[in-house]
Image (cartoon, rainbow, N blue to C red; front, top):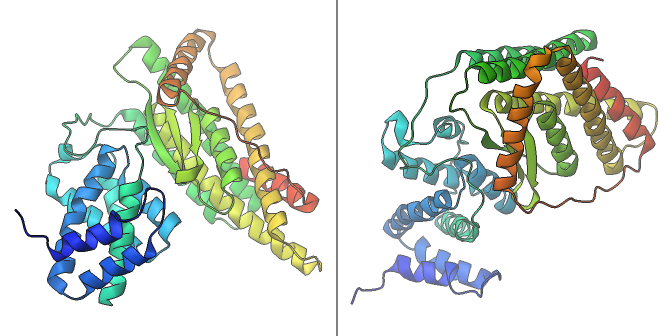
Length: 377
C-alpha cells in the first residue's frame, strides 16, 4: 500500500473535503499550511498541477479561457501561477508546430508575466485555490482539438492578408487625435471587411473547398459585459458570423468562416477601445459642466454605443450585398446557412437574456454620438 504523502494530505484537505458546490476555507488553510512547511512539497504540488490543466483542455477550455476565469473568479494574484502552470504543461508537447492546435502558440505567447507570491503560505494558498477552480471547470463546447491531437495546419490563404490591412486601419483610427480622420479610417476598414467577406464567398462558390465554419472565443469583460456582448453580437452578424454569450465564463463563442472571424476580432477590439476613449471624454465634459456622472451614465453610454453600432454595421453589410453581383448571392446564402447550422450544432439550447434599460438620457445620447463617430457615418 502506497504511503500517503504531504501533498496527498494537502490535496485531500483543500480540494476534496468539502461537499460539492460548497467552499471550505478551513480545508484550504489546512492544505496550504501543510505545503508551506517544505519547499519540495510545494514543488511536487506544482508538478501535479499539470494533470488539472490537462483535464481543462479535455473539457474544451483553452489557455486564454483559463486565464480569464482565474482573473474573474480569483483576482490577479493566482494569474501568474496559472500562466506558469500552463507554460509547463504545454511545454510537454514539444516544439513541433503540429503538436498544439492552431492558435495556441499565439495564446501562449500572450500569457501574462509576473511572479507568484513569495511567502510560502500565500503561494500554497494561491496554488490550491487555482486547483479548486480548475477542478470545478465544467465541460464546454470545444472550438478546436485538445493538445496532443494530431492536427493538420494548412498554409496561410492569400486572403488572410486582408485582415492585417484592416487591423492597421483600425489601429490608426484608435491612435489619431482627430475625429474626422478616425471616422474615415474606420469607414474604410468596414468597407474592406465587407468586400473581403464577399470575395471569400465568391471564391468558395467558384471553387468549393474543404473550408467549413470554425469557432473562436472572445472575452466579454466586466463591468459592462451586457453591452459588450450586444456589441460583439452586432459585429459578428455584420460579418456573416454568429455569437453566443456564455455569461458565467466571461466570453462569447463566435462561429463563422476563418477570415470573417479574424475581421470580427479586430473590429470588436477596436470599437471597444474607441468606445472607452469616447466615454472618458464624455464623462470629462459632463464634469466640466458641473454634472456628476455615475455608473448609470456609463451603463447607458455603453448600451447606446452598442445599439447604434449594430444599426450602422448592419446598414453597411446590406449596402455591400446590394452592390455585389447578383450571381454571388447564392454563395453568400450558402455560407450563412452553414454558419447557422454549425452554431445550432454547438449550441442547440440557447436562450435570450433580458437587458436592463438605459436610465441616463445624457449617457444614451453621448453613447449614440460616439457610435456614429466610430463608424464614420
